[in-house]
Image (tube, rainbow, N blue to C red; front, top):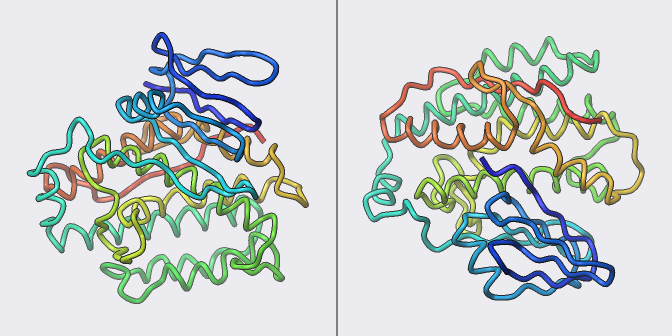
Length: 293
């Protein structure tokens, strides 16, 4: 499987030659085999990409993410078509059974809350009352236990003064980390022949990644945990690099140990198989094993 993520942080020309991405800077030239790459983040506004490289990125199902002047992801590439996309795949997505969609969403919420509880427990923070909220999750999370837990979870993990929507280094890091995971999920949705736009729970007209926004939920606590273990007062390049490296963190997914990016690949495949009635998915197990602090 592809194992390399590439981050561009300085003035550079990116082009394609000899089945490689060529990165030319003021100092040197580097060649990265295109078949090894699954993610490229252009973390500068001073990079130039050739159209042939963009064409090859698209053909090889590589996710390309651009950031704004503050370093926050602002857009990503989404192929019009994948090698697997057909009318029948998109028709099946539009016609997914409501019961299947609600069952999957219920499992996503439960796994997310369970992982949030695990984070609090790991940090010796109060968590036992949230077990009651987990047990209270109903079909399709109709009573919105996800939001109830979130209100308590973030202030316990990051401190009583923490407000999720404030412009702070922690929130900037959370948003960045979530965007990286979302990009990887969207890449795999398209690679499986589906569109990230049509979700099972999220349905916002202005969200091109509703399905990705659904599937990311169990992964968010992994980002939360890493950030809560860092000591930083500015959203620096080191924090950004660390968040990208999380894609190589070791996790246990459905009883198997694997890298996080490989778990995303398997997870997306499992979810669409379940929605198509081709796989049972009574629980979703996603557990962080370890990463570089």
